[in-house]
Length: 532
Image 1: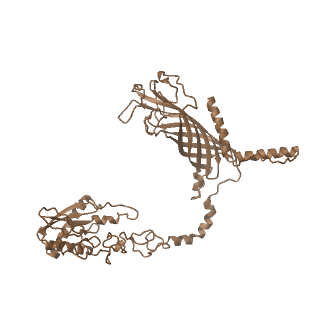
Image 2: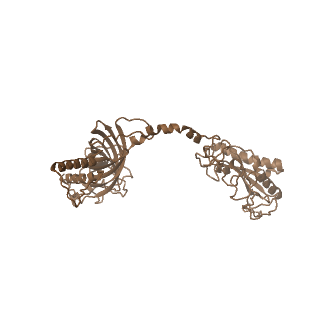
Image 3: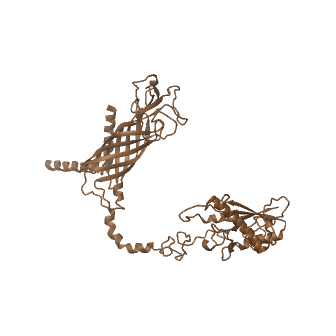
């Protein structure tokens, strides 16, 4: 106990200079000034008074008492404390601190906290609990508990949330202040783990050899006890009773980079404990005229005078989410996605906005027509930007590079045939697909001995059953179109449908594309595969 008192006195002596607003030193000169005894005495009293005012203005002494609740390896329940005739998981502690108000928003606090925390765990249940028994066979199997005594010095920073809220609201909470705090400290502890019978299991901060006894365990000296850096954060509330006394309610979480606090080392380094406390604070000296004024009250007149400008800045005639003051395309059609400057999106950067682009994923830098479709000079279904054989014979079967391939008898051909794309939920073949479907027809007419597997695909919208039916419907519509418009026998086609099971790209839902991004268009398609 004497060591704790000495420790506390040294702490207070070291903290008070930290909170002083000025460092006043004796300013000695080479000149001696003769003063009357009365003047010297008056100046001395004035100096002492000013020094005291500077040191203790807006300073409080806080006294808090409460209970700790530990979270770590030895704990019966995750959230609520547990009790037994041997021990319990709520332990008493107290805190003595000094708080210095820096400004209406920020305060500094130096605190000393001392007490206990503990935990229990009944007999081992399940495979997720590991008994820590370095000496082997010390754990008796009916359960264990630990008690840790600790002393801690903290340096905390407090933010007055009540005053911060006045930036946004005029609400006056009347004598109530809420603080958010964080800080760092040094934690000295002695931890002892025992069986429910009281026999020793393991410890930290106790003298060697105590495993041979069941009582009178000897702690190490304060300097030799284990020490850890602790990080803390929490909430503190105060109710102002009068000019001198405030009531305080405090909840603080203390986290140490250690797994030793419960004498149960699993190398997790996740031990922490909460300190729930109640107390009061005493204001040593109030500084006059230091009330916090709501900032909104000071700027209300300016805000009102600028309402017209604000309304102008927020005006958006085309409803694209970009203010007219910054919109580079002020007449964007409703529903068209735009960038931050209000310009319609152009994913492939071919100067055709996506909402007008029949092929919004053309190769970057490729030459396109007015509909955004790349040119295909030899009509083999491969755009010129990717075609390595630019003069392919009409109707020839080509691979993905536009190179002619021959059809053998194996029935397995690495050939390329253009896909047919559809609108969401539709099986209608629109005009943007006419050139692609014509390429298929020419190839079929020039190669009368081949058959095609027509595979329908959908995006993720809709139920699985609906998408499966829609996929088959799309493949049937393509076959009917080829048969009715190009006189190709339907027996040369086999229908198939993947539904939504084999997408080319995954849809991403965001604020910009609430119904999925435009990449989902690639999943709404019909593919072709050559078969014998």
